[in-house]
Image (cartoon, rainbow, N blue to C red):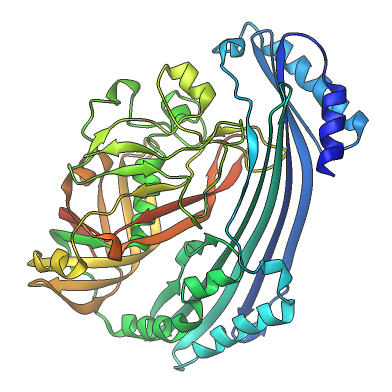
Length: 480
């Protein structure tokens, strides 16, 4: 089919000084769940279509269609050219001055056993067993074991001979336990908010230790019922990688998106406290903070070879020794802002144009083992797994809550704490980064639910991080 589409596209190309691309997206999603030992109705969706992008006469135009026939492609090209003519002369930049790439190659997720090739009865049985294993106490009022799986194939063709094929497969399991007693309800999960998700096939469940998690999750949920509230006050805070995921996402990822800095999102998802003149000068965090745009991490959720505009993806440090060096901006935003960016121009589907998105955004590991990291803390709290979040529209002031905490006293983990929360200001929080865990503390997480843009685009991003220790943080207990 791809060869036939390529021929139809090239046959439909007009002559003249323009740059035209066609991006085909074939996507299949599946969701399976067992709740309280009852199999829920499976959810599946499949869609396929193309989007045409035209740069012509200084303007830019799009047209999308599920019609993959020769006439459908030709009509989409014609409509995109009309939009390019309309935007010529009123666009913020002359897109004809862009140096367009001619990408060629293939890229695939690392997959041992594709999820779709495992009989559905085996997939459901795996979830049944996990759900049943969590049934250890009558105070448990809800148990859920679920998996979301995605299979996406894209083909990018350009009028100057570019051709890139990419095939991404991912699996994201989750298990949650809700407990209730004496008017108190607590929830503990594995992969809260679908954070435990990676590229690959059914082997991802083994990589993440999914089968072994139900007993631990259930025991911790019950322990939360009997635990005291998290203390309140200024103290040391240690965040596990599954909470660092959210911290990175909200207070680094979104603020340094270049289109947001340029004002594109202010009417919808907000603006940013970061400004263009900060790059190369602004001390975003302590000297221990190193943050990478890392599309090359094997198995991480947003790894890829090329972005959706055809720019080859390469690993780049965005924050180096705490200094803000480079934004998350694709080729068009880079031209607008006159600043170097990365290959992160992405569209969530065939009927959405590309825009600046996070991909794999990771905090680099330090050299401190976990026991040594804890040893230097006299009084603090260790928090895991996000459960609530709030951040202002400039991505600066925030308040986050976690599922579970552990008291830290004289360098040792102590009793379990419930309802742990903390708050801060992005511009100061990262400067209080006091210790960064070594590679043995790193966890690889992500989310398939990052929303942005009008019309809305929900896309997958990845975040890896070691355990991190922050000093003098405002911590508090109770509902966030």
